[in-house]
Length: 149
Image (tube, rainbow, N blue to C red; front, side, top):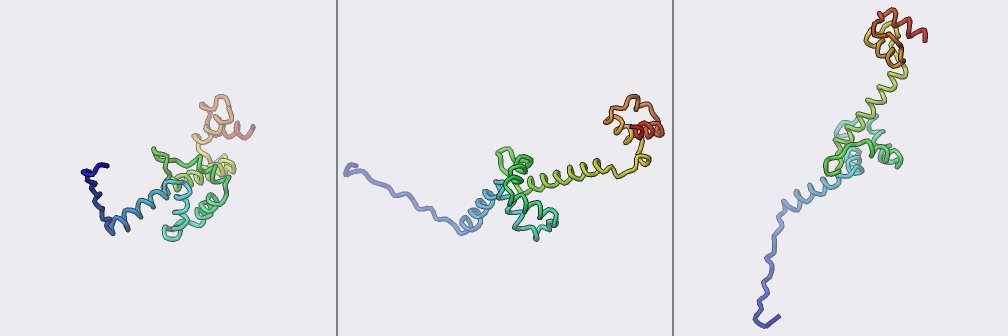
């Protein structure tokens, strides 16, 4: 530097208490929720306040503490366009998981007796079993054909 060069000092930026206490904290909270672990952690921490059922608490706890379950769950939970997770997406994935499990149990147990099913339900079963001519059969014929197999 030459003797005539003047060095200007950068003006100091005063950080307000609002920026420190509100904006910075909110930014850190958002960053924490962007990860699957962070979203699960938030749900776990506030499980009582948000009224999460015992069944769901057990699932969240299992996902958080079992690496294999966590990695399988990670593949099934949706993310934002930027690849971020949120507690909302986690709740959706858990709901979908329970819904699919309930559907599988109902199909497996087949709780409704075949005689109590509607013609439409009987035709769906007949189609799954590749029964020929089921579309023109009456309810009695469908029941007879399905019970004969």
